[in-house]
Image (tube, rainbow, N blue to C red; front, side, top):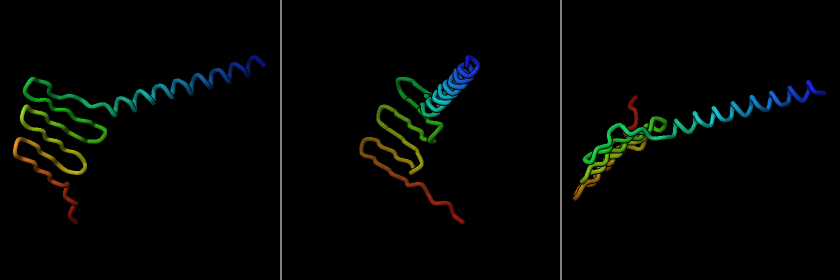
Length: 86
């Protein structure tokens, strides 16, 4: 009976460790990495989604799977992602 309880305890412990390690790995992949952070410019990228954001005092550039967007005073540019050509 004790051996059975020990095996159940070990199995549950292993499952808990796997769940924690998997959760930490998933959390780290979703976090953005800040490449540059100065008063003038902030460049941030998300490795999991491939999104990149550039923030400057008068401009904002964002690149993701849908395309590239640029916003500045008097300027708004939206360039959709081009379809791969055959």
